Length: 494
Image (tube, rainbow, N blue to C red):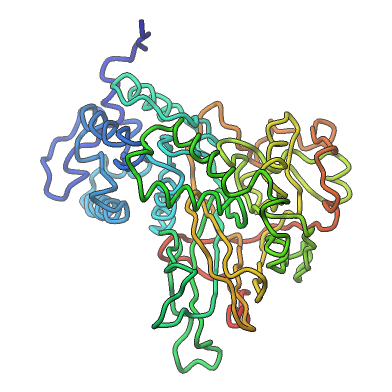
């Protein structure tokens, strides 16, 4: 028999937002006691098979229907702009409840990592004086963002009891800041006419946007190139892991009816990894197409100035990771021991220290070391800024993935360069449970001495000591309004 948790009387009133706050001109009804944890809920009804739509129904049954939104029907930026505009108008009329709700508002987003990243970008864009922290309901396949902050990685129950339990965790959750990362990509413009086979039309994730850098009259304007910018909070990867993810993504788009169960999705993902040769990369994947052979990597040094990062020829996948959760909860960076900390200036992976960890993998078997208690990938660098330069080579394309969203990236076919540059630009607020595995550099309970660090050298690859870097930096806005750092001269990126 299922155990039911007891909740205080009027428990749901703590989350309930009156209609007149949510909708301009809505029914005016001021509660005798204001909510202590006013909450807006966004649900991707297409995530998790039928789970998304079922969760949407349950949340609307326990809260005000006007504070629960289906992302398939209304974009979150429109919802939040409307809400905060109404709150501002009410504050001008000295409405005390509107002021309280603005300061105490929390957001729940139910969906995959891409959906969670979408909400993080929107909240960052709004530049709010009191940005609400975000709790994530795991409805995806990997669910790295929810797992990193203690919300689990298994798809949740959709019944009333499960929703009430989650709301209780939201009420008890703690706020954490995490680094935001801006990504800038420039490539040769695609031909306006003719076939682009074998490269299909470029389908970039929603968090990457095309933009015009300067006016046509500017002498630094570079014609013939497309420039995109965006952002991520968990990871950016390229190479064979992204290739497997892209194949899974394409299969799911073709046959969505086969992907309604998380366990089935994960099993299918593993099978695709085998068919793509990720578990026997040295046999099925030509070394001339290894990611290490296609790019030049530069990292910004602590004292300033770019430094070339040597990548061993066996590396087939490179991961830039911000959170200690990848591929369903694994930690590719681990915790460097005293030797690594002293000689290479490497630290444990804090989520708010302004540094991103860069890790390499040879194949999926190499990735399996992450299952060991002290396992990690090949540590390449820690930095606040990294640049990848793709030149003409043996491959016509590579694969990239950003916070769960993969795409097939064309590579140069002439003497030009495709550039991807990642910079540290801002912070956003997440909501975390007591089981949160993400660590803050500001947390006094976390040991900063090397004596308690648990790295195991046997997982180091032969070239791991070839590069090191680090630093702190300033950060960004997000989604539609990413700002370019002042010291980034993107006219030079072509």
